[in-house]
Length: 582
Image 1 (spheres, helix red, strand yellow):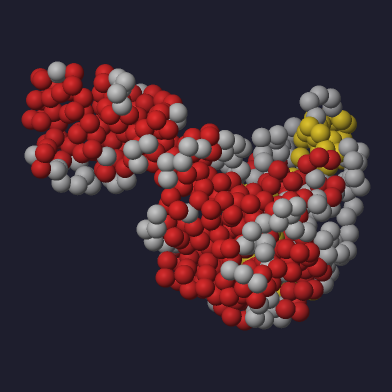
Image 2 (image 1 turned 30 degrees about the horizontal axis):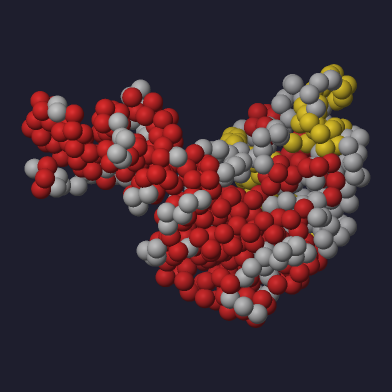
């Protein structure tokens, strides 16, 4: 958990100037461009500088935090970490996909509570050891019985490991290359270093606060690597094989002196992760923060995997735990008008409520429930996620997952409003605002989905206010693109339906839209079968036939029946032509 100095209100973006400094990563001296300056709080006076030689960013002067001290939020910070905050998925995935056998020796530096160690021990059968001086490490040693040394890792003590996991650590060090060199020496021959760290290239005003504030961790982080600077640093200390994956706000790297093993397939790794979460929940004290956190994560994984029977069982267990703490069912939980404090949320076990209710809504959609009736559930999920974010911001912290959940739940509520034909649906969809994460196109995709939903439900007047969402897909289709996404194809079809069915519709434009859709669908089906490209073929032909009749273009109508239908029916994945088209 960050110090209040890491709050977004405590720094300003730098637009000019240069500072003389020596890069702690590559050693280059000279002028460095400032990215931001800290104005208030314990870190006031620090600047984040970019090194033009290696591409990293670093704070000047360097912070000197005490990681053994109680974090901001105290025990409530640990409750948040267990219930919601720990990024378990990326850690488990990074080591499971190495595909190494039982008995592998793993050392984790800066292990925190020890979730990575526990996954390696329980799920993979590895021999593990961790180092962490923080209270979180002490809690993991106590609650999970893990061999965690309550101290910093001291290089050169003779330890050797097959795998060293170093997640979100190197950015805290003043001399990162010295540390990486020590890790290289601590590996067995052919061993693998697995490392995650914030991405310096994500330090920009467009990055949402839920991601930017933890990325910066002002007062705690020292050097932020770019993909280039991290790869160069790993190779400079002796690693022969290096892979650095850019995941937006974070970098995931692995390094070794030998080629990497083939690894575990994604589906197998995902199933292993879900199984570990459930075993972790079984071993945890009933009703504890650890159990709530494990079950919440397992439930979300089950919904995402479409395992609805398992998801329903997990939600039932969670709901029972929350009834004991909340005094009501999870689905009936409401945020407080002035927002709960971090302590109140911790005592209620309420940090994961927003994410769980979002997935509860998705579970019910997947089961075929009427989306039009689920708006209150998605709205509640968004508000509960925001309530938790507000409580975190009071201690200078943030959570990117909660930020993402709040946005997605708000978008889903807007789609529910569209399904119900509610008058505010267009405004809700148009007002989705800043998109968390690395995919800003999600807002446009949600807008197109809402537009198509309104058209399919026959709410044409409301849909017309969103019809411009088809303009970009139309331009891409007419330019010959073969990779239009389903929401783009759906938007083209929706716009054609409006022109064909509204009293003031433009038949010529409708025909243009329909043909652009048909041609784009054909190109995509030849590239990869399935999806809306297959499902929309015959509805699009029906609209095209209607519009040709309206325009009196008999020759084109005849050609459609005698040549077009047969060609379309032969495309891969297209369902049989309806009787009207045979």
